[in-house]
Image (cartoon, rainbow, N blue to C red; front, side, top):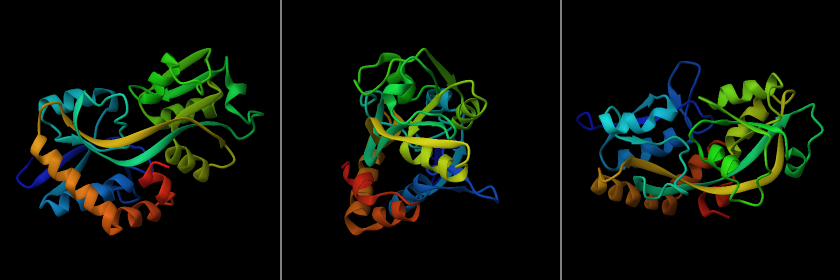
Length: 235
């Protein structure tokens, strides 16, 4: 921490963490973090990082935690966690002009994902029966680059968190379309380095729980068009 400021590592992942027209960080996670840490007496400062190098930023102390649509599921023992604060689903996005309407049609095709994400792991390991077997899985540094690969027809689908997909589809409906099926569900959390900040993570958990109970969390997610019951309740 820099005095009373928490440095949070994130990447550009609308509608969770992104920049508005004036270059300020905004999004569901920005609002959540500002409120939750604010209740503990901290200011927050978001810092854009190279997402696949996130561990080195934590190890060096350049950031205090990761809060950027980061999945706890499958990483429970890798970090000190606060959360889950939100629940999410992974879905597929295809080109709007393609004929795909369901996941099974994408078996044997090419997929793009963001590197070091649960989507990459899910497509490569295929431990979930909903996940089709792909001909090729291409990994990109950012979701924006994965979406560009889809636009240029290098791949047939992109897999990402549902509201990140809907954000892209809503912005560019002539280019992209969502396949309305769940590949798998995730729990999102706030990650501190393993074995570090344990007292702070516990206090943050208490603040998050209070936000869920007093309606603040619901107001934040609804501001960004989320289904509050599913996002907050895991339903």
